[in-house]
Image 1 (cartoon, rainbow, N blue to C red):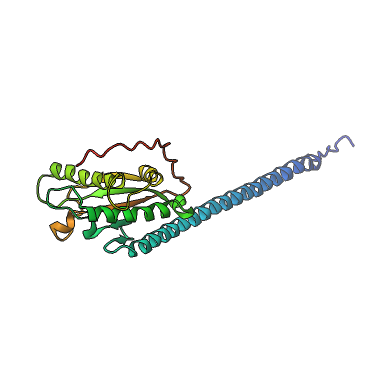
Image 2 (image 1 turned 180 degrees about the vertical axis):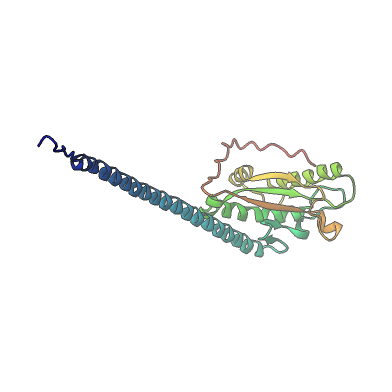
Length: 236
């Protein structure tokens, strides 16, 4: 009787520890499931944003193509004016070529420009134009004769002369005050010397109108409030 050994039962301790480890495993499983759900939602959101961006970019590209086609149709109504859809420019060809070393246009050339500009304004201010067209840069070019800086100045004078033609107060096909306000807000002057020279010197002495487009989700800035006082052209 005295020699009997006390038997220590450990089953209760083991069973007391089991609920803790089961709960910890369940917690880890729940956290893993939650992590997977969060990651899935995040991936769906990113994919949706990428898809929406791609749709906007594609629509933006289509809008540019559409307005370029409209400019091309407008140019067909005026002999000698062409639209280069790849370069996104309006090329006046011989209708706006300059004599060697000169920045002046004859009355017939000025008439051609003033007849075409209202079509540009109309297309720029319809629903599509307002959503996609940012501005139009008038670019003058020269041939390769002469120095770079001299030709740069000459190209700027040619661009400026085109703008002066739009604001003329005498001659045929004059723009009205409202159209002139539109020109002031939409057109900009640029000069490119003999860069992008064409095959012949005569073809290189030209002026082009390059279209710049708004970016995706970008809006055209409102033109400055006009006073109607356009001033006089300094070029004679």
